[in-house]
Length: 489
Image (cartoon, rainbow, N blue to C red; front, side, top):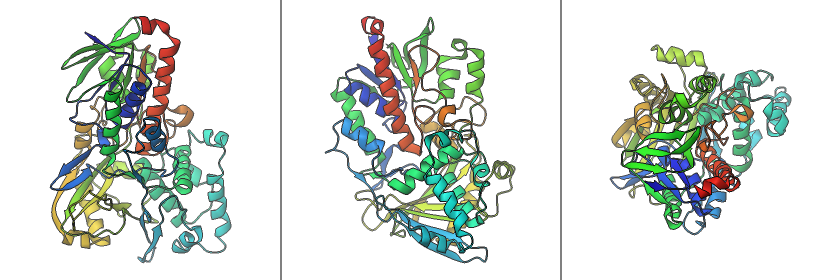
């Protein structure tokens, strides 16, 4: 049986980051993933001359990021180019009278002109002081004050301020559901503020040249260059435990031993399936079972015969697009909300991602995370809005593909609890599951860690996962160095 110092289960952004750093730091590392390529939900594929991720992927912030830090640490500065678009896109706001107003969202770390935004949103002179108080409080939030909001929902926080519906909806819709993929009432206020502050002080929309998969493939290359191994198309069946400590993994291609195992498979699949409940205290099992995933995502990829979008991102909202758990439950019962937040995006803006004169466009909508979800009602709703807001898209479709929680689950995590598996991010960034209340990256089984969206990081999507990979790699390295018996086994 082959022995390693550390085994990482899952080559999503968190897993690949963690494995690459540990190999760089001298630990004999094995990375195992069920897919044919690395990157997890952010892998990049090729088809008919297009290079694309299966669904819209971007990163925030765009300057001074964990991406830059890890690329530098791995010595990939000359191999990986991180692009920041400028401008980022267009924001569309529909007034109560039905007028659609737009404003350009700058990129490259440039802040949005607040007065131009307030003018678009119809903020009057008498409303301005309270609006400014809200933004000042958000952008000037101290770490202690943020900690106090870990258990507070976003709408409860916003209700502390008497601001117009347009401001309320812009923050809840674009800056919350558009980044955290959660109903606005249960989304964690502190996590929202962290993402909002990063996005509005350090920019958004970061995209690696060649796609996110290209970034993670470059990271994978450093694992092999530093003596590690990668097993793709390999499913982990079990994480073994002996006397309260991990011993390695059992896969469909054999068994491998290691005193440290880091799981990027999700905390619920890890505890309830790969390790097994019998190795944990019952209260911990109940805690893990009750954790809430993010929403799923249903949408479409449109392959166009000509470019329609000028910028990478287009977003729409109105005063009536604030989402709540009640609205999502009603939608599951067959009654879709009258108005929804809508976005369009393209990665064809970046060189080499589409054939000349063509464009790939994404759209989508939050939906239940259950892989069994029938996505047609959500698809119909979002396509109706796209046809209303951006009719030119439908004029030039050569072919289109739909996706939803079932596709997300097949690519990433196995469903082990009811209603979960197809979550588009991972553990939901809801009140009570963020900041100091987020699950520890260190499991109660010796040598077992979680990495990725579920533990070890905070913030927006891919950036949160890479931050987790960096943090958990440091934790595992320190554990290795401070437990000499592991090195002698």
